Image (cartoon, helix red, strand yellow):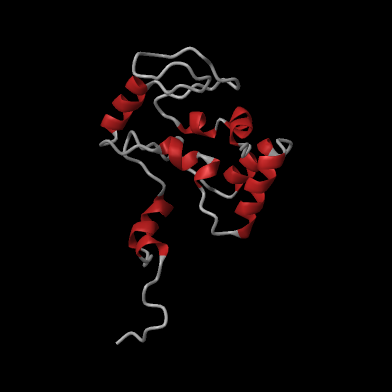
Length: 149
């Protein structure tokens, strides 16, 4: 089943842009060449340099994940448009760069730059609000239909 993800990754590379350790290659075409013995050979993919990745994760107290938060496919389908985007991507690659740019425009992913450098301990100030917001566990409000005392 072709969901269009492979074709989308050729045009996107948002994960490689977000990777502060440069462990993910920026090439538009994947490769058969493995960067080290830690990778499983025999696939044509964008191999991650695990040594670079792990050393950066160690500096970030083992919690990096910038590549995963930047990925367009990690967005949950809370808005109906997300299902439309994924459906369009699965059938045509014409809008791939547009969808990546819209992902950036709407502020999805990770803030990183001169003011937001997680390696230096500077994070997006708006992200602090997330930790104090009253979000129900697992995104489900278990108190719906009950009267609070």
